[in-house]
Length: 309
Image 1: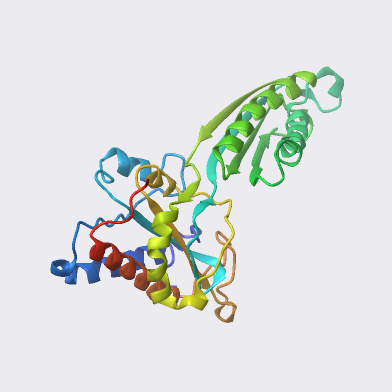
Image 2: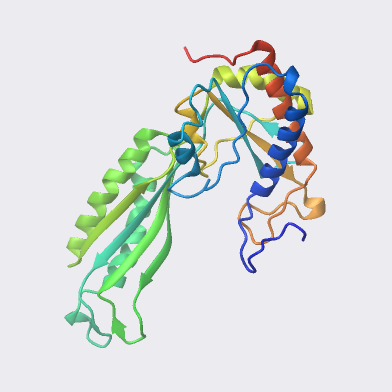
């Protein structure tokens, strides 16, 4: 493909190349209409969207959001059919945290486990215990995800490891659930590991908070979406547990983050995000562009977006 990665074997596979194309189109058109647009419009080509360090926080620290009345964003979605869009109020994406758990025991020969405190076995048992934080400690009506994505322990087949490491992520839609999981994880890891004769420490790193769409701004932009795709193509879409550091912008100004359908099984554009064969239907690009142009026009006409009460 012409747009493949320049690094063999590497891909992000999430649609951000499409987002860049949409933004470039918006930049070109707005520059041509410069004399007709009221107010100041800032276009953010933001890096580092999916890492704890966060490009959004860097932009904020540099003053990019200073004086902003409202901010719009969007994401192409392989879960939504091309031609449809969603813009819902409230929490629509989850907070994104990362944790690393180090388990320390005492190693030894694989033939004499009774002389050791097997860190790998302790770590393996922790995986199941951690899942119970969500399944048995969180209200089932409160979305939460705790995923252990990696485990590292041992070097050879006949040696019991004295150290093991678990790495994973925590996702939540509300701050209270997020806080609860972080606190309970610390306690669970400490006492479960002690009970099995080991020690452990947790390095818990908070990433972006949940993305919360401002209802007044969503209502204000609804006609812009209808004008772009028609009322029947505006759909409701449940919140997702993916993270997005656009959330930081919403803490400073009313924000609205839309989902744009990019799914088309007819051209194999129906794989989940980050799948090795991920692709989008590029018919989604002009749809997203029309929505943003309509939104900018509405804001420009009123010269300001709705303010928070």
